[in-house]
Length: 97
Image (tube, rainbow, N blue to C red):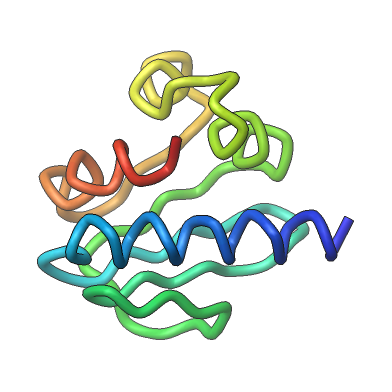
């Protein structure tokens, strides 16, 4: 499971850098699996301050990363909880899939 998560994080890092990064810091809190923090174009698994926090389970994170679930649809279905800057979360959405 950890290897699969590492692969997803590596792919996310490539997508974030290709898009030019974010205009702030977003923390993705994956229940039972840890934290992914994106600060500008830097992606890490270390916790830190953020302008926006997304909370979701591992299954939802994997489905979004695989392109099987749209991040906006997941939010509308209650599978993602967002605290903080909603505009930043919307900026991240296309980078997740």
